[in-house]
Image 1 (tube, rainbow, N blue to C red):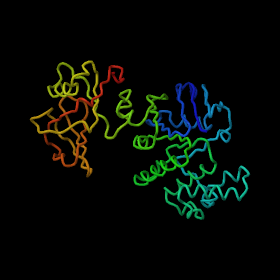
Image 2 (image 1 turned 180 degrees about the vertical axis):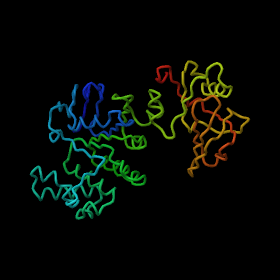
Image 3 (image 1 turned 135 degrees about the vertical axis):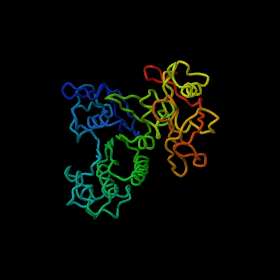
Image 4 (image 1 turned 60 degrees about the vertical axis):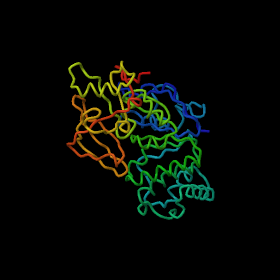
Length: 351
């Protein structure tokens, strides 16, 4: 079992409220991701679950038991940090089995548990090596293996892939997904990378200023963000957010707004549209825009555009064979109004 419940959880440092009352139920076996900007409170919340930070107010329940005052070693949680924190003078096997040794587990059982974890992580041939002989990805797998041998109820990951290069991060995401499927253990994963959040999480909790802005499945957050903040944070390239034009705004701004409205959204204060729903057309069609930059990625292209009167640049994600334009070109924009999102003056999604 690995159910984790946060009931009105709060954390203050002096007069500063860092976590402002979080209510969250994490299901047994779930892969939960905490995502948000730096300083939003996601890592602090994880550290409170681990017992590395005290809880100012509220309750932490693990499998129904109040864990606020339990020693970290007694909570049934194992944490994997951004830093690998391996002992350089110990082999991989010794690093992985060190916590078991300190707990008084006999050598035969330690060897068995370390061997099983190494099989799961596909690193049996590395057990005799020292950390200096490993790549960054291999070191992180050792850190994960050190957590696996403890057979915890809950795995806690604090930005474990941040120190890896882009290709290794992709490989490790695949490994973590496979590991979760094989072990079936509850995992709580902290990241600022929304790609990691979208690809790994069963559900995602989007943190903002010490509170959860929205909780939901990845595609739910992408397609129906509750607020402008979530809409802008989830998705790459970023969503296009267009303000309602003032009466004296340029004609192009008014024309774009009317196209975004479609048959609804007449009371919106701001309208959002994902880049894949903004299409290019000849200049005489749609809304006139100027190409500022064209990023050709192979299978697709990201076109950055300026529309007169609209604050900031708009992004269009189009198939590579439809991106026959360059900086300085004039194009027409054809937004898919059926996919637009309307936000009110309070920044929340309108029904």
